[in-house]
Structure formats: C-alpha cells, structure tokens
Image (spheres, one colour):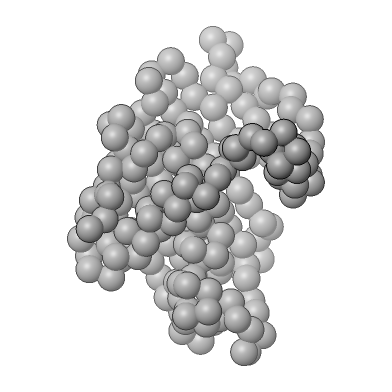
Length: 182
C-alpha cells in the first residue's frame, strides 16, 4: 500500500524582461503551472485521484509575476499523501529532479538513477536512458496509427490541471481545497 509520494523539481529560470514566462496572465501562473503540472501528473500516476490539496508559494515580483517556489501537499482518495515541490529560483545548483515513493512493503527513489529498497538495502536498478520527448512523440504516433488512447490523454491532463487550479485557490485563500472543485 502506498503511504507517501514526493516529487521535486528545481531549476534556476531567469527570463529577460518582457518574456511571456514572466507574465502570470500569459503563463497562467508561475512554476506550478509552468513545470509543476508535469510533476502533478506524475504524482497522480503513482497515487491516483487527489481528494484535497493545500498549497504554499513564494513570489518574487522582480523576477516574475507568478510564483517562483511552491510546495503543494495532496491527500489521495486512497489515503496516501503526496507532495510536489517546484522551484524556479535555485541559484548555482544543477537542474534537479527527484522522485520518492514510499509504501508499506518498501520504497523506490530516483535521484541520479533509480533505486529500490531491497532486503539488502537500497539497490540501483539499471534502466536504459531515453530521450523523454522522443519517446513521447513515438508513443503518440503509435497511438494515432493504431487507434489507441495515449497514456496521458486529454481527460487525464484536465484532472491534473484541476489539481493545479485547486492548489492556486488554496494558496490564494489559505484553505485546504477539496476536489472536484465546485
């Protein structure tokens, strides 16, 4: 049974004055909708449907109108909890992605490789490297040719967007927001 899922995304995004990413209206927000939405989608892929969200953010208006740092906490229908932490303000640090999945029978994490909690301790799992964009396009083309539904289809993307919009409402109101939103 899943207990907790944590996903981190850290970049140092500095865009020139007038760039569309600096505009909250044009981007739709900040780091959460710009990059975090993909992590929300992954969070949902592991944990299932989100029941509630609580979100906190940091803004730096001289850098961009939207948020530059966000911590979104989620409660899943299964009872599992999850967190997405996304930053576009990590100075002098490499682009960093981390995924941790904890369950009653063990855990798996991905930081500079994939590791799982074996009886002998954490063991690195050899996974072939792949270009995610190439594989995404290959999968999409395969679905078109074979009349299949993509792994992440419009309905799934809409559910992830609803989680992000609920997180924005939570940050703005200071309240936990239940899904589906009214």
